[in-house]
Amino acid sequence: MDLPSRQALEAFWMPFTANRQFKASPRLLARAEGMYYWSADGRRMLDAAAGLWCVNAGHNRREITEAVAQQLATLDYAPTFQMGHPLAFELANRLIEVTPGDLNRVFFVNSGSEAVDTALKIALAYHRVRDEASRQRLIGREKAYHGVGFGGTSVGGIVNNRKFFGPLLPGVDHLRHTLDHERNAFSRGLPEWGAHLADDLERLIALHDASTIAAVIVEPVQGSAGVILPPKGYLQRLREICDRHGILLIFDEVITGFGRLGASFAAQYFDVTPDIITAAKGLTNGAVPMGAVFVRQRIYDAFMQGPENAIELFHGYTYSAHPVACAAARAALDIYQRDGLLTRAASLEKEWEQAVHSLRDAPHVIDIRNIGLIGAIELQPRPNAPTARAYEAFTRCFERGVLVRVTGDTIALSPPLIIEREQIDEIIATLGEVLRTLE
Ligand code: PXG
Image: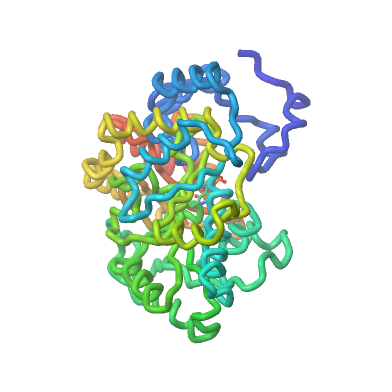
């Protein structure tokens, strides 16, 4: 494949990317299959990031490709405002086979960001239709990532994602995050210390009063901030506090949904049932953009009041339940269920944990965290140059044929759920080598 000139790279303003640095020395992917990418200059790369946490069944699955092609040739587009197409209903019915509890109503969107903004709007409107319109506050958490819409940015807690964009939504507050190196570094799986950090919600309730709070949104496992795990008992405690005060609990499962932890959703893994779940990414195995919001039946039912000809929720997208996305999602779910991928991470979890923690004594490592098929290796930042060391680890892994993801000074691993033992070994061996070459 001919590599593009520098000039040819200028027009595309790349997201969350150092554009000038990238364009001076681009990393281009040309093709993918199974656990591997091939770069534009023909090198094979082991994908230890599942793209961006989304290609859970591995790349270029034939069943998905064929389902998408056939759907495009049959019904390319269909509106879902006051119209419908059968596959949208079928997909919703299929999805609620794998959602927890009575989260059996599905609102379709096109991304994780849209799922989050939709969930927040549903939470606000839910209280209003129940005559509790004073519940308008939204509670997020420090270091959270909930996408890039104004709602998700507002409840998010990563400073660079917020500070450029003005005051954001009013009436938002944040829980403390749960990362504590002093007490919890190198925990295997969930940290023992910190369940009481959930009581920070009681502090916010005491400050604002429960009657003003609509919902709390958390990632059960924080991804983008560098894989931050909930301490044992933390999510249960959040659930109890929300229940006690009539506050909706939203789990943002854009990363944790569809098998990443070894259960369909983190809700099942932790045995904590939220009121709303947001999902995207693995929903279509990354093949076509799509997201979903799952709500408990009583939330949906609360809207189904008044005259039957009244629209119950003034919200939706041109591409909600796009037929091509629905086809990809149904084919992805077929694969997940047929091949046992929703639980495969559970059978690999111990081995994965062992492998990731074997890097403990490698140079620069200050913490290692793991859960399901997620791993994080946090490096000591270089003095006066935060993120530079981890970024270099990322580029050197890329040169050696392993694609990892870096956020801050943390290397994050989230391979496709089809990974085999030798591939786990290859990721760890490459990382070990790279860490030894770093200054
Ligand atoms: N919520 C969560 C928890 C996410 O992780 C989003 C919402 C937004 O989804 P969309 O589809 O709008 O991007 C995400 C996205 C990374 C990384 O490696 C993580 C995400 C996206 C890109 C990179 O840190 N998560």
